[in-house]
Length: 319
Image (cartoon, rainbow, N blue to C red; front, side, top):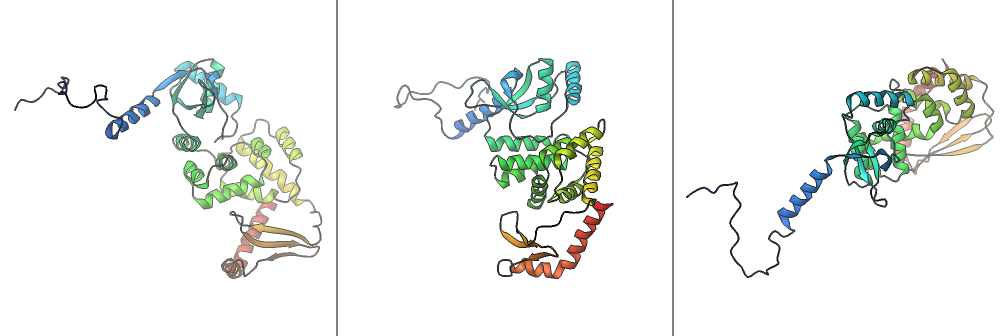
């Protein structure tokens, strides 16, 4: 049998009883999948888009970058061109406009240069955009702990589920809980005054959060003093300055606690854990054995060790 030349078109089909106008390849099965694949390949093509048509709002995975960082990148792009495309997605309610998924600093630099942005255009929903943003982060400079914590907080405030946040940041639930605790305790204005602090890990940020919680610190004055005394310092050094300033406030005589002030303590999931009663002479922690029998038994067995660890952390902040 002769082999058919694969580069020749197939012979026309024999007449059949089908309707004259019926499509040869229906939109089912393999053809539907092929069309979907072709659309995806087309969406990955790099286009040139006017930066003025690209919005840069949405959850941020980085603390604000300064003009120096943008100017440095702009000069690099001017000399060598934009080597890495950004990713954008079309805005459904604004035809012809886009929202950046990742590449905000590159977009800012291109705006300075008044150059079109080389961009991949993808049609993504909110969840897909967050996952793409988080995955792209893993391919470049790893965000600092506090940047990840603030990104997680923004995602939570935007209504994203916990599973989406975990996948976007590639973290587990205990780490997310720690990040949420820090984000709740520190005002954004203080974090922005310090910066990303890439050399500062989770434990020190947690210690800082513990130090300011219920301390009565005037954050406005603290940030003003920090800005005045930290000009030219690195972000890590500004963190150290903030720690020292907060320690000085903590070393001052504490204000008397309100008599019999009662505070309800809950878990990260909002379940009641304990009552903390602050009186003129004592601080009492009360756990309901009926609500949390397992936790109460564990705390009873480990109270000495855990209190000693808390005391060590408190002592370290006084030095």
